[in-house]
Length: 406
Image (cartoon, rainbow, N blue to C red; front, side, top):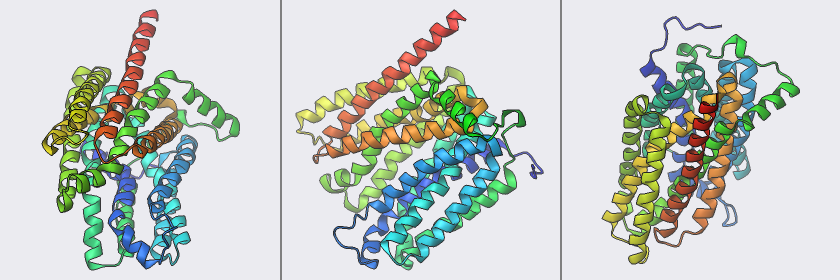
């Protein structure tokens, strides 16, 4: 039942969805400064992989998306969002009270499972309300807020460590999670229309899943998003050793990292303005072209300098690359979800899980090539940008041919 008395305005809706989608980034990035402290506190040996505290949350996220998304097509978005927050709250309490590495890993896995609900269902809610360029516009504006979390979360975690033990970081996560849950419950009405609800059965589940994965436009743009995201995830993993150590930014790394992220946010904002005028495909294809050309040119320049050109050159390249990525990300998600309005829950689950899986696998490959230079990273952007761009171009041509045939 809808208990919202006044309709939620678009600005508030964007802020709420951005907060819900960014909880995963908060849960990952806020804990990064505390990894060493946790390792000492729990008396972990050198054989215990402290990075599992990060990666196991992503595993839970992948599992949770495939549970909450499809179920929301039967029960509605709000009940499943509540269930996810419930799992997250209990899991966060487990993390706070964990006295062993195993219990902490269990809590982090369940955090990922729980956070999958606000992450994937916010996408479904957006698709319930918007389509086409309007959805791309909303996604672009959400990305402006969303990108602030990776910028600020590590600083938040470090600030907490100055005055409190590492468990307090999880208490901050819990507080922010409860705030977003309360906001969502009070202000966001149910968006799944009764005529779009699916009967809960294995047969319907399988049929819906097959319909999603056999929708060429959706799967094509999902693969395109996952492929190009692989290089971006590899950048996140290698940014600290590359800029903090090789380029010796030291304490200035966090500020430098935030500056590049700000470029991404600005690009997303302008994409939100342009997309309703130019269209999604128009902007995506030109952004891919800009990403590939800049990457190829800079790869040649970097090779001349043995993979370590001046920092000013590197910065100029990443400003261009991230400006292109800011346009690409919001539009690809909207293009992938465009044909799935009648089954947005399953669609968001498959789109999210598949793109995350592809990005994660490619990031491992690109990351394994890191050699203390910018060459593997720039080459990764050039190759993934080319492949993902060709997929997007093929889908655009396919769409035009199909439109002419109808």
